[in-house]
Image (cartoon, rainbow over all chains, first blue to last red; front, side, top):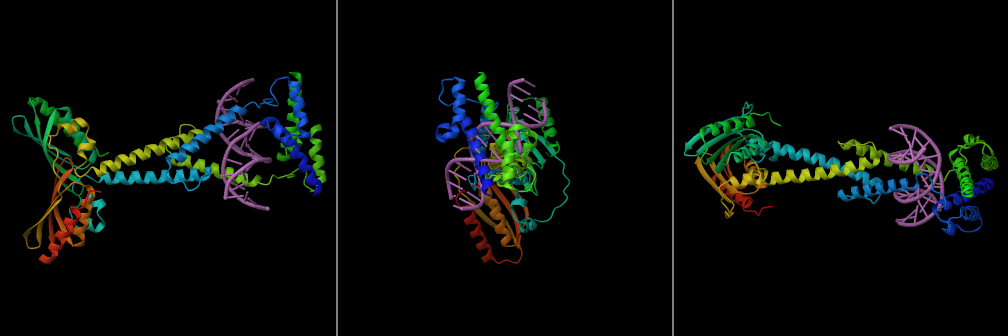
Length: 225
Length: 225
DNA sequence: TGCCACACGTGAGAC
DNA sequence: TGTCTCACGTGTGGC
């Protein structure tokens, strides 16, 4: 045991020599064992006082790499709201949990939004609420578009569809044809929606309206994304 | 220069001694400089052949810690879909980007859901879409509830309000009063919504319906959350 | 060859 | 006191 201790201390001394010689702690380490490196430095002839005597090939590169890694950990800690402990490990764990939570949240919200239109009645309401509706199951789904002339430049646009994104596309299509929406009525049931737009298109010819109708049909009949 | 080289090599020798003595590379390192450690081992008296001679206090602990850290990095790489490079640094960067993206997505979806009823027309459509609506600004907001008897156990429930959560609460209230919703019509405009429910309440007395109406009023007139 | 990313064991410091 | 976390420089393998 004492011999082991002796051997260990001798190793430690050598280690200190080595580390100090690289880390420039030589001044603090001081004393007798420092002589070797100082000798070496003096021989090196560079004017610097016990500094920059030997650089391992990739000392600075490794230092930079550590810096980048640390910055990333820090940035990760910045974007994760719930940090339990200020340690790398818990930071990573919290980040993982947070990502999972966010992914679940996104999935939930998308589900809610997809089960619109009309306020996501069935999903947001509890099951008993859903049951309180008169049952009308297995309604066959078929997107439909009607464009009915009402008068000069006025039309009724009726659309029957199911998914949310379609409404936005319809609105954009109307915009692209300079159609003014003067009123809008939507009836919803079990996630299906029938909407009636009152639109005004100033000075457009019938052929253009046929084009618009065709565009709307392609939108509504597209498979639900 | 040659002297510097000499000094450096001497340091390297010491370093090798130290590292070898710890890493048990002594056999490979062999030769003259190995004598020191072997001497130490022999002195130590443990029968093992040049192995496990000295363990820094927390060698295994640090090894475990590294393992945990690595596992976490691996787990992080597992939950992040877009991994650009198989490196720790890019893994962390990708994780950060993914978290930011998810957070934005959640915010967007929540916005979309909150800007219902009626499919978030104004928000999802671009500004030009919003402008294509005939302007009806500054509509004074006042939640309203009407409960009109239609026949035996049948009522028309008319609700005018703005926010999404209210619909759910209304539905729950109807459920709690055993009101069957036979049909529903919603008209939306600029985020406001007027809904007409056709409901059936079997065998309830008028006083209960007054109670229900009062409950619905308290729901609708609540400040927008 | 150099460059890059990684794992390694160690010492220092916090608790 | 021990335990834990971290930063450090080095060796090594892949390109």
